[in-house]
Length: 250
Image 1: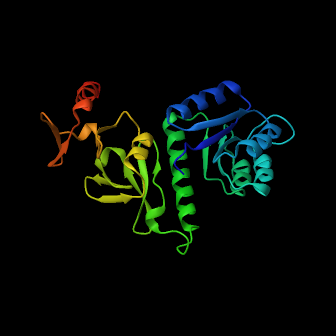
Image 2: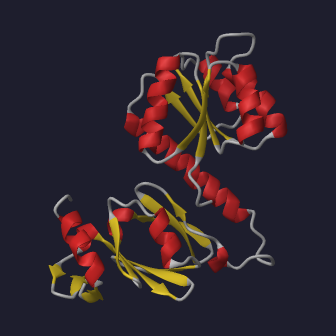
């Protein structure tokens, strides 16, 4: 699950939908559609297979958001986050019967939305790992799950969350790479090149063919190396200027 999380917005107020879409795009998610009615939602789910649906309960038309979710759940297993300005007990209990992953009352802040989605993703990762047969795949073969501010990695038979700010550097080991955080190490079945393409660039820079570093963790800069956590990490001559330029912007 290294591709961006795909999210469908079902919201009959298009200005609200567009604002939510902008927030989600900024957070690194892929918005597959903004639709106002049940019919369009059903069509979009069929065509685009979203991972998460942000569903307004009070839709215009014959079906409201809860009834729409019930129809979707007959054929698709997709995470639901309800959005509503009317959080009364009746609607809440109706919504609860569809087992949503989250419930957000309008108006909400960007942080509320971000946390609801991250908790939903964490549940999806856990559910996915629980469904993996040990006979078919080893723990190390599960790819990391990279978000804007954290990485979920497989460690001791479970997915654990590693905050971006806690990562010191990442070192290549042939077709593997090893994450060094402040207190742990994690071995991943992923090349350093792939890891470099998926990590948020504002935090990380590949400074050598074998190393990616967290720019905020650099303690010393020498002629041909940098120091992070008492580790001397080589810096390629061709990347030294880029490193210095990036350090001026953080």
